[in-house]
Amino acid sequence: MSNYETITVEKNGAVAILTINRPDKLNALNSKVHEEGVEALDELRHDDEVRVLVVTGAGEKSFIAGADISEFADRTPVTQRNTFQERTLFNVIDAFPKPVIAMVNGFCLGGGNELALACDLRVCSPNAKFSQPEINLGLMPGGGGTQRLTRLIGEGRSMEIMLTGDMIDAETAYKFGLVNHIYDTAELEPKTIELANKIAEKAPIALQLCKEAVKFASRSNLDEGLRREVDLFAICFSTEDKAEGVAAFLEKRKPVFKGK
Ligand code: COA
Image (cartoon, rainbow, N blue to C red):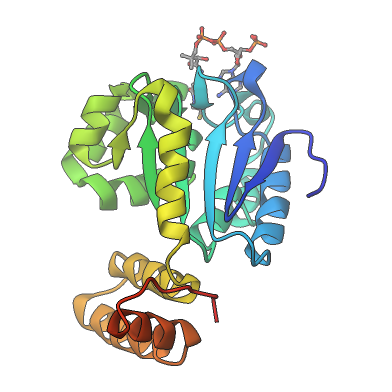
């Protein structure tokens, strides 16, 4: 992979780990992180060896402490609007065809929480802290938070998080359904990789279509969603992996999926 200034990308078998690497700024998301992150994701989406992506932040103190506030100081409304309408890391993760897991260690604030929300699953360590603190800056969430958080945990809980700017701890995030699992700090990476590998063993095209169908659920009405599911399910029948999966079941053996 290319050499980046603000991120690192590491491949571990079928799992790639993209790390936001600005620990001295608690991994705050500046324009360079968005630019380099998007470039890395464009490369990873075409890398057939990679079946699952894990996104995390460098160090144990912070996943991502939000957008880089220093970039807000001189920004005009038009520049801000154009910036967030471009291919941001939020949008590109949301549209990434392979499963993405946010591995949250420490502060997960503002744009950091919005980035985690753009991922498919979220896991965290017990010291994780989540918030949408934009309101304290005279702002509101702008990287998808008002929409994705509300769809994930409901209007009442989401409203309180955004209107107070308060942090919630890992247990509360788990109770709200914001995170799927809390792993002990020492176990966070191995357990996340274990989860990623479990998913990576499944049929890649079926994973992609399933992800598309689930994402469609919160973007459509029930009838449209059910019709889309029927179509995507039927597309699975065109794959070699469906033939392999069915044959392996009937032959009482483990399937080997090739992504074809
Ligand atoms: N943007 C830019 N820089 C940030 C940042 C952000 N969102 N969050 C932290 N940093 C920087 C700090 O300015 C500091 O840099 P410096 O050492 O050059 O002064 C460094 O990261 C360490 O942060 P610091 O505030 O000293 O750590 P702390 O442990 O005392 O506090 C936080 C941690 C997360 C509570 C605090 O950094 C904070 O409130 N950050 C902003 C969170 C936020 O509002 N995010 C949403 C933005 S829309």
